[in-house]
Image 1 (cartoon, helix red, strand yellow):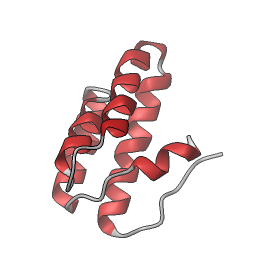
Image 2 (cartoon, rainbow, N blue to C red):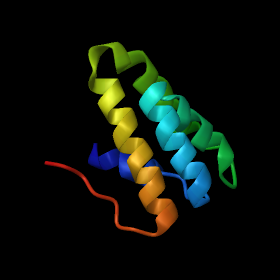
Image 3 (cartoon, rainbow, N blue to C red):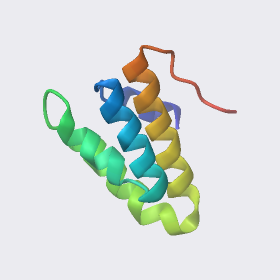
Image 4 (cartoon, one colour):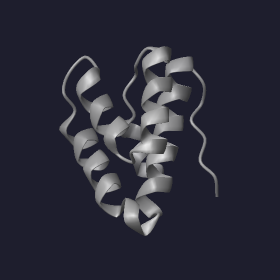
Length: 85
């Protein structure tokens, strides 16, 4: 998942927190919204969100979606993005 960090969009902190919560409840949806919420539409981020949504039933997409939501929030707060493992 290291390669996905470059596709994390810089957003306001409140919006990033809301999208993290959305990603926990509806995997991939928060990621897709973040692809449209930045300065420009990021098609790669929307594709990543779609892949998270499609692979959510396999649990992989759900975990990936949560990671992406946490990265969104961390980037909004100006923190270094973490990766477990």
